[in-house]
Image (cartoon, rainbow, N blue to C red; front, top):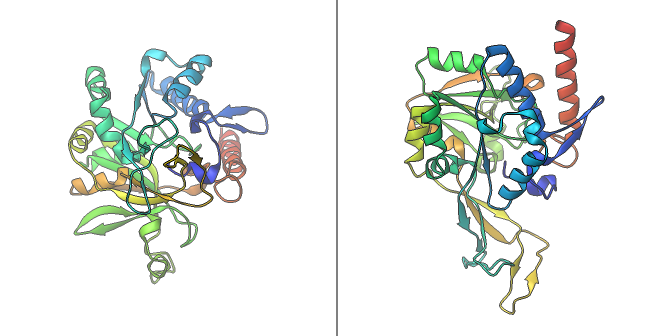
Amino acid sequence: MDREQDFGYPKAKGTYKINFANESKYLFEIIIDTLKRANKQYNVIIPWYIMTSNENNKETVSFLEKHDYFGYPKEYVYIFEQGKLPLLDENGKLLIGKNGNIKEASNGNGGIFNSMLKKGAISDMDKRGIEWLFIGSVDNILQKHVDVLLLGLTASRGNNIGTRTVLKRSPQEKVGVLCRQNKRVRVIEYTELPDDIAKITDENGELVFGESHIMCNLFNINAVKRASTKELEYHIAFKKSNYLDKYGNLVEPKKENVYKFEKFIFDSFKLFDDIAILRGKREEDFAPVKNKTGEDSPETAKKLYENYWKKRKNMV
């Protein structure tokens, strides 16, 4: 969710359009298609909660309004903003943005719990009687936003959290991986896993640290409430960001120049004794749009998506 710089798309990610063989669809539209299918199958209307940033909130609302929410009932869509934290330069000093204010950035996807509490989303869930919440990313176009298999597994095990994974493509793939630390499940982000450790294999030749966290997470409402009152740890990312110098001139850096502090949703896992883990298949569960070209690009995601639905059609 936080790799927009690699992708190079300046607008809200959900407004990005993918050109499939027979039609074009926005990322938001693909999510709505998934929800509509589930609504029809289970004879319900599933509420959709969207976390935006301060930078793209108005744009997101305007986009969905313009497209009439792609036919989804507006009263079942709840949009809220995530929190922000200041950026620091390499000397640990605050920066000034082009608006004249202290330069800030979104505090990572792990800020969702506290934001849901502050922005009234949890209160809205209580009013609707919601018991389980699926939290996923906007850019995985094969994501099962209504994951009944994961729900069944998690509930039957008596867990409050469940997550669907896929095996890493290679030791170098840029995904976090699941492991156990002090008997509790946690995720090591790829930037924090040493290369020599990432390459370790077991007796079957499978990566020891190969269970990818692909942002397919299921939370019981009580788990969400608990996480919303806790302060998750911060991770540091080195990013590139413009700023105003002491003379008021806008500086556009050519390389990374600021430190960003962000929380990750998977750090909530260690708040609980155990979580349910369901290993999925990459060709059925993971088609991310992260990079402009190459792996995990619109082209690779498009191919996975079209192959998946072609197989589903042939099975009917």
